[in-house]
Length: 336
Image (tube, one colour):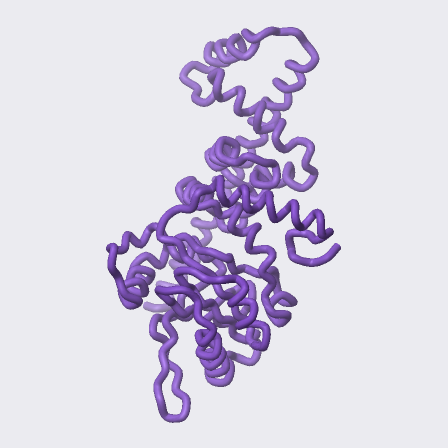
């Protein structure tokens, strides 16, 4: 019976793969069509004096040729033109545009202020396979600004050598809907109940393993709040949750947990475990002093229960970019 089930499962998987590939192919052809229409309109408007009625007349002609067709009104045609003009000069992005849906492209075009931000969300959407709703949430939470501002936070060498730092300086967990008064257990349980959204915020390379993960040292039990595995880093990630501001003593406790994980849980082919201290607030100078002597790969981040003000983060990013430029340092934190 098991052999039959396995056989049926393989056929079902073949069908699922074929359906997915066919949908991707349809999307690719659709985006190519919008791109070519946008390219044509852009060129025509630059080379000929058609006036403002050109787009309206084109929309009417398309509707008469294809009655009931959607997306080819005045607004839709202008979007195709905007789509082409936004990416046609980017040799890195133009080959990628067919890999996400038109709906996601419209979200990015209407929400992002700069070329860099648009390119960032295209690449992120491809990597994470975002739905429209997931993409909107990441844009609303200022993920781009938070990611770029976190670029100056360099992980210890063991991790930075393996991969680009996947941790943010701040995480937004507005989806928890916590009461005005709550304790660490309430916070932990809310994250667990909303793990799908939490992993969307962390990044989909994170795989949840367990809550209150037990390690035993010297005959005594110790419990790590949340334990994840990161596929990109190929290592365990211990997460400790703190309601108040960061305190230096949290580092030694995390060091202890990481040592226990590396000795007892880590497999030979895996990299050293990484720690993430998630606090309500932190002083960067205190964090820097606290982490300066530790050899463990560790990150201290703060969490927000409400969506951040994107304008404030954008101003911070511009300020940091200006300082980096004056000091001849790139956003990765390295001197050029």
